[in-house]
Image 1: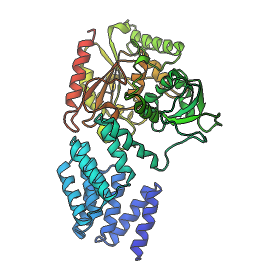
Image 2: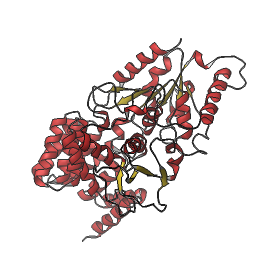
Image 3: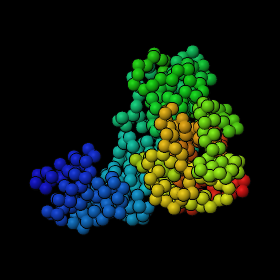
Image 4: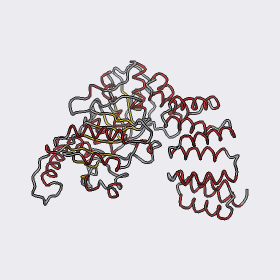
Length: 476
């Protein structure tokens, strides 16, 4: 192994442990010493991709391919960067080239399938996932991906079966219990422990299954992270709320929330939507009346002062439509580039007479406010939101006082739906499986309307539809 190869391996180890600055410096030093080192250009391209510098990564991969044309890894990675830039045909050409050079190349099959799925060519994407399985029949990610797409299409028999492959991924959470996993067995007189397996949005959406299991005669234990305790203590059907990493009581079965949805479907042939948990302006999650009243008074004071406590103008909350907006999900989510939007794309909503916009963006994405032309048109909440009572408790109370929420596919969308606030959900051309492929409503949340992209990456049409809805609802 040459000196340069040793340095690249050392930089790659730094890269893998998150020391991106040091890794990049080493990659560039190797390139400076030998501009014809194709491997160094590819390593640099991978680092740029990880930093979401997709344009830069394409340039690095191209430099590598100018040096060495027969380089399937570089072709595959270049295709993936084009995919993230929305350059579908360029990406397809790269994946074709990679597979022509390496016909058994698993990553190229995965990326080629994902390219077409996210482009809205579902059947073409499925074809490449299935082609990959011909070469790699036990590949967990391909099976999981097939499951997700069939669930999106409403093909639940195939979808749930394939989606169960996710449990073969390392790092999937299971609690420390000797009880067997529940797979639809009768629950009368039995105790079952259930828990979230994925993100906060999934936990908020699927905790509804506790009530269904309770209806079947089970004693239901729910295990959650400490920060979600205050919010979930209001969920119906829970006999005992447990905190993760604390000792667990004995139980007869355990299952994740999503597994419960799966096996209830196997038993009944129906998805457990939890429709009976909703009534007018009310869902299955609720915080204390005192907290809701606290934020109702905050809105009243805000309206009376015009947002300025020194203002003597009087205005009642009924004189405006209070609309919460949320535009950015977790940037680390694999599909964030397809589901989040920039704040400025919501600019048409700020032109509606009688509508006041409130930012529901806390944490990542909130920095866009200071950079946006909309900054002055959007009311911000105090910094103490959700800092005292637990995750989402203040937000849930705020949502209960809003007239509408406009949001992308984030945990705020699920919370608004679970609280029962009328919600306008912006969805990319190929949304998460739970929203299905078509339709303007969802059985998961009766007060939610879905506004879908018809063209990949183009948000103008769904935003315009929401603007029209709010104009009609405005009291002005």
